[in-house]
Image 1 (cartoon, rainbow over the protein chains, first blue to last red):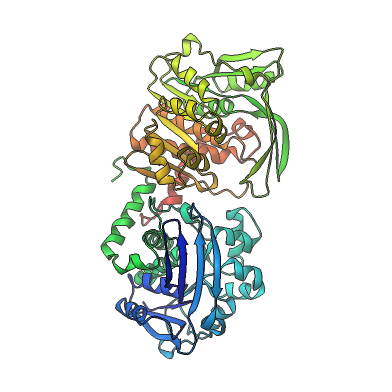
Image 2: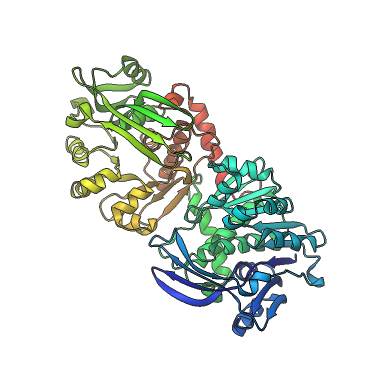
Length: 307
Length: 307
């Protein structure tokens, strides 16, 4: 099934205790599209970059069968840049700088050929823009969206309107608490379900992810990794793996949503093993499948064989 | 199989956003013994209380078939008291007071009839005392122990000697990081495994629990609860459910250790539904079994039926 991804493309400067990179590929649309392309191609991408966006990056997207018709290139301006430094335990980070550049006036224009996309993934951008995307589409089957504390704090009313148009919200645990004004995640998810989405997925970083529907609950572990080099993009990668699997299978049953969460977690576990998108330059579909199956062993307490 | 529990008995004064209790039953041995008694009886308990320890508490233990031969009652002194206040989100708490009283000079003396116990659970007490317990025993099959940041900070060398005598260490995530001086939990667990225990269980509160052996890894979710009244004793309750199940089944295979972790999580999820040990005054074995089976549904992403 066809998949449309809208979000940011960025050049990230990242420091972790294990090294640093400068102007490395990043941004929500970049991660989501790259990762979803393991499951469904072409991925239709809408975003904006400046004239300084490396040609090699566009070639990389094309090698992944990402359709870049919707990529706006504003030659005379600069690409969105973000810089951050992670703390010793990688659970917290400081933003060192944010240069919006072309992203400041981003107006997502959906090419005609994208408008009948079946599945849509809205990366973390201004909720007003997320809504503008949905309004241009012809009845997508499923709209999945992300958001962050920045928009919850500053665009709360707009975000609420956008949530009414989302079928699935993917959000961090701290952001879920903030959005619902409720510290208990189970209650928070119930409150958010009343705002529009039929499903909420709460990402908890090293603690895994939770999936909530009105009546059910699913808990996915994080894959145990000894070496985490760079958590940047793990959340977007999760979204890319999730929506990629859904678009590939075209199956919205709860059991398939659960599988999609595990694919999201699987891809996120690969993401953090290298800086930026490096891991996806050599990651094979077979490795993804192997790790997906290892997830079963991680949570199994029922079989005698632990096979 | 026979089970020996050694630890504290306390009168707790607890404030949470949902209410408060004064001089309520608490302490690691109190929780562990009460909970383990769902699975194996009699539970042999060693601890110390003052003359002010309520008779009703001893009657309660006896109603649970906890053998109190090893309970020292020092009539002229007072029972250990602890007071704490939980924050709004229940993830953090402040200790308001600690009155060691009889606990200050606690010397665990193991009655002759307890010395051949097959299973031993050492609640969180001074590691020197934990070791003194083990030294009095005739070759137990399994020694499970808990500890906390207080002992890691102040009795590090003694704790290391005690860890050499433990088969399974049950510990919080922050304490595991502190003990191993390593922020990554996978690496931390590997370091702790070299200190003696063959198995480490890391409790992560609302994020569930992890079980590590030299070669394998198991992730258990926490049960999703909308109403958590009092987290006090949840960690000890986990230990009680874990060791209770092990002692009942006398099976140290990895798959049974995993089941024991789920029983620990199951019991902990009941503990926090009421203040102090209140929930265990009416909890039935059938409720435990029902919730154990619900845990399977929480993590299942494989079956088509989600049965």
